[in-house]
Amino acid sequence: MVTERPMGLRPMSVESTAIDGLMVIRLKEITDERGTVREFYRQSAFADFALPDLGAFLQINLTESRYGALRGLHGEDMWKLVAIAAGSAFGAYVDGRTESPTYGQVVTVELEVGTQVLLPAGVCNAFQTTSTEGSQYLYAFNAEWVPGMAGVAYCPVDPALGISWPVPVDLDDVAQLSVKDRTAPPFPAR
Image 1 (cartoon, rainbow, N blue to C red):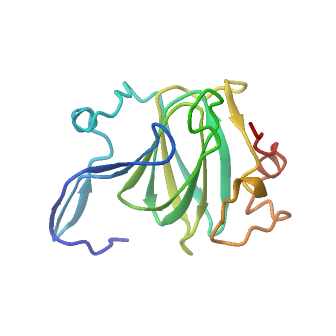
Image 2 (cartoon, one colour):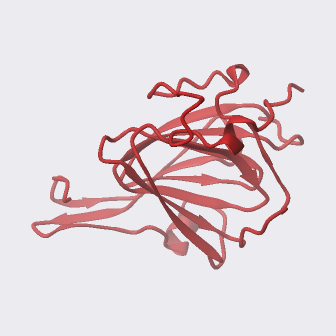
């Protein structure tokens, strides 16, 4: 599916958030009569915006999710660069780093094709698909995921977090929310 975009060049832009080190990135894109080309990652462009050098990506995942599906809230010990490859989603990010000055801060982002979020290690990531045709959510990691690796996981529907998921969540529907995510612990107050 090709989405109509204005012709020409849209430069990359970066905005900081209320979570220390969490950045929302609008990708550089060039659109012509054939469609659009986006730069998913260019180290020199990251350096121009004083973003960290992520080195080589050691793992890249593409998750396909149906409308209303909710995944996460996971904060592994690795940097993540996440983006929507198709469809749309609602992203929620929680600072799970106990030593961070923004510990416990929640940031939400409407995710569409051309928008990325850069997450420091220990910042938790969750998303819910908002497009009726589903979504494809792309993760690029600077480390390989291994069972038992350092990190945290919390229940994404913990009322204390105050995340307003755009699609109502049926806690008993495992096609919408996994048992593992539903039964993850609540976020600990400091």
